[in-house]
Image (cartoon, rainbow, N blue to C red; front, top):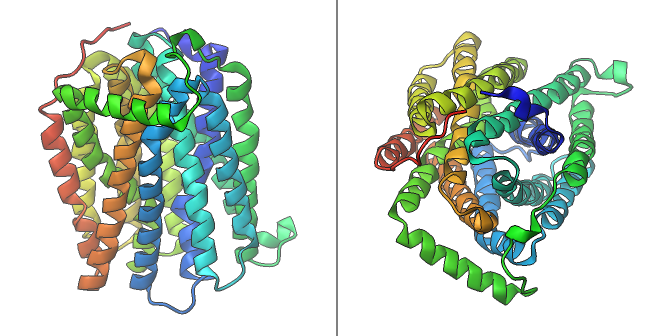
Length: 420
């Protein structure tokens, strides 16, 4: 592996966007929003109701993103304006994240509305961000550069979370009155972080306009391209099988990311222990994501995915029996080892399977299925928690998604590998 690809300015700028917006996933989605939803924004509802609300909000955001992703990607290809559309969605996510600071106590519906809009900005932007990869580097570099992006995201998100945790642990030192005020200020820090570190992508990553199809500046043209791409995918059994497999196993991954803190609180773990566990996951995830990039280059992305999804299956079963913070830390280590790998290798494997000049349209479907998947998992967990009055049974329900995804993935014929 020639690591010098990591030092090219466009590659650094591209990875910087992952560094920037991963703060939203870690600080907001995984840690602070569930904490305030269960406490400051709560109206006295039981923990199972809070779990249902969070699951429903995540599912709603995922549904909306899933519906717009194919059209968004097709329009980006038609207009040749991936970066322009990416900027619009990034601004939406940044503004809505900062707006969470203003939401008053007990106003959980307003908080969830801002959160849903911020998630749409985050996910819509990521669809376009992913589609820049095929034009950024050579095909044989996809595994390494995709992993590089996720690794940058892990360390960037974790570093800001450390600062936010310092504020929450000692609010008076920062001129704040309470831990709740510190968490609210954390929403502002995430918005600023996201905005500042997004700038290199817009300055240094070039779009290769000669790769785009003839422009037709209309939604109708985008809709026609969606239909064309859908037919192309339907006619390519291998790509279709991969997308279905990805739909299922990434559902389980996203569900664990979004519901882990809520689950930990429900089984009686302390919020500080949960935050430490999240940090463990991300700091381990940084080198582990890079390792999976090397692994994908050596044994292939598909075999690397077998390993990563297999670990998630063991983690899901193990979570049912967790009773102490030590056990939760153990799960955090396990997830950190494979979380970046399953995401980065999925992205690079798919990028190697699709036509480069239609990358946005194809990645629109890729992200659509990812978001449709994220509808099922959180909602499934929320409903099972309500029906059985048990978060332990709820987390076990996610197991079926990993098993089904792994079974379909085994039927995919991986693209020919090109080792550096």
